Amino acid sequence: MQLSGSSAFVTGAASGLGAATVALLAASGVHVTGFDLPAAAAAPAVAPPDGVNIIGGDVTSEEDVLAALATVDAAHPLRLVVNCAGIAPARRILSSKGAHDLASFQKTIAVNLVGTFNVMRLAAAAMAENEPIDGAGQRGVIVNTASVAAYEGQIGQIAYSASKGGVVAMTITAARDLARNGIRVNTIAPGIIDTPLLAALGPEVNASLAASVPFPARLGQPGEYAQLVVMLAEHDYLNGETIRMDGAIRMAPQ
Image (cartoon, rainbow, N blue to C red):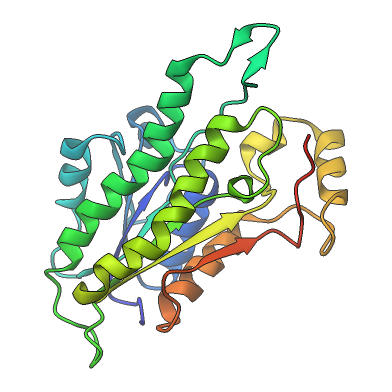
């Protein structure tokens, strides 16, 4: 599916993977609407390209997502939705602080899993109204974001791993559910990516993490995630897949 001239909706658009995706899509001739928490949308970590509108809201809110989707340029059909919004708290099930607090586990599931589902269902309803773009009846593509933690969660990642494992598990079912609507669904599971959150750990930690990647022995780049998003959109026979983007790393316990 060619993206130029169509519209895309990207969550977590103010920084990291989302910001890189917004930039590449805009440079490819796509009309992009971004979505992020209000504070992030008001002061994005990366300045969005000219013409890109980042709207504030909560991915777990039906009202916020519907309002944001309503701003998508009606002259350019919504063909691509990319779910990048997420949080990653660190806490063991049992630690010196006691049992893992239930509230933070529930919030992680709400943002990473329920939020992804909320955006996916509402965006799919909008895309289903599109005229097919080809003879196969294709109307759009949804790309969700999981993590290698869905497969090899490290110590302290119980909530994050559970939420991302849920995203992986939704992928094939969502693709099957939406097949009759001409909407493909794929997921990217990134490994260790060079984002501002990771940079805050310091150069020594980053060097150690990079050395743990088999090949290439470096951190992944947000732009590489964005490239994979575009590839998944353009490759019409990729559907229901979760693709690891991780340099062949398999995470150690800690």
